[in-house]
Image (cartoon, rainbow, N blue to C red; front, side):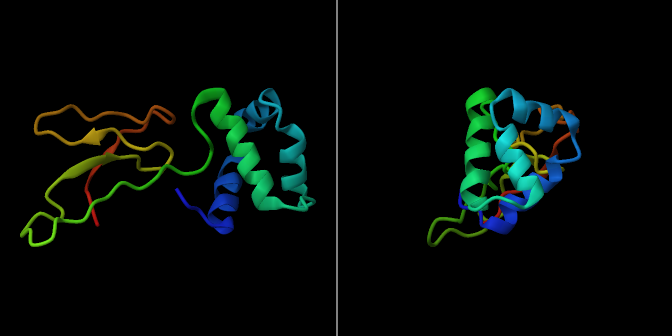
Length: 124
């Protein structure tokens, strides 16, 4: 997933009020990185954001960057295919969702927040 610096900073800012995030940063060896980023003293903020995200990913398989948006485009010449499939999406953008929506399926929940996922069409 390619995120720009503004999106990466926004991801960090969303987490800064959560004491568990700050505690986890210390646990994974990222306390110094986080302190520099919070204070605006990082000489290379994007590089250090990426490193902090890598530390989180190595520890629990999840980084703090937002999940990739899934989507597809219809095959060339296909009619009526766009928007036909639906995907379970996290309402908070914290997890990557839960797969295709099937009729009669119980609503899954976000593994991170516990919020019920929302069925939305896959978009190109």
